[in-house]
Structures are given as C-alpha cells and as structure tokens.
Amino acid sequence: MADIEDNKIWKYSIRNDGTLAGKTFFAPKGSDGMTIDHKGNVYLTSGKAWVYSP
Image (cartoon, rainbow, N blue to C red; front, side, top):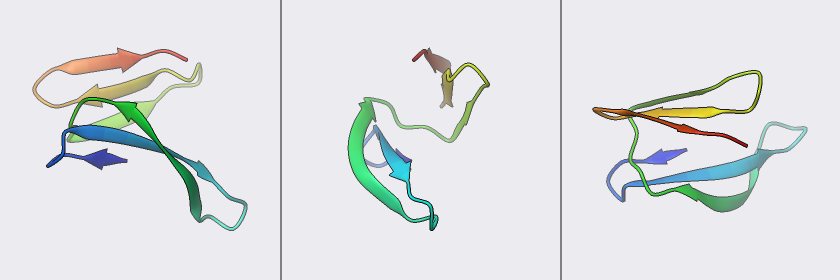
C-alpha cells in the first residue's frame, strides 16, 4: 500500500476473509502505481520505475 504523502510503501498479509494484517515497512518511496509479477518482483512508479525482487 502506498502512502504518497509520507513517501513510504507498506506491505500486509491478506487473511482468508480478505482483511489485512501485519503492517510492515517495505520501501522508502511514494508510488502512483505498482504491480507484482509471477516471480514476486514488485514494480513501483512515480516519475521513475523501481523494481524490488524477493
């Protein structure tokens, strides 16, 4: 989840009922778009693109 104002990305676990748990800091970037590929790479965009590998 992107917090653009605080310039941070957070990750969560998704429970079986769809709720989120376990908020953990992920990256020191704001992002106006993101995706993940089948290998687990996370792509963040905001003027540039950053790629985080598992």
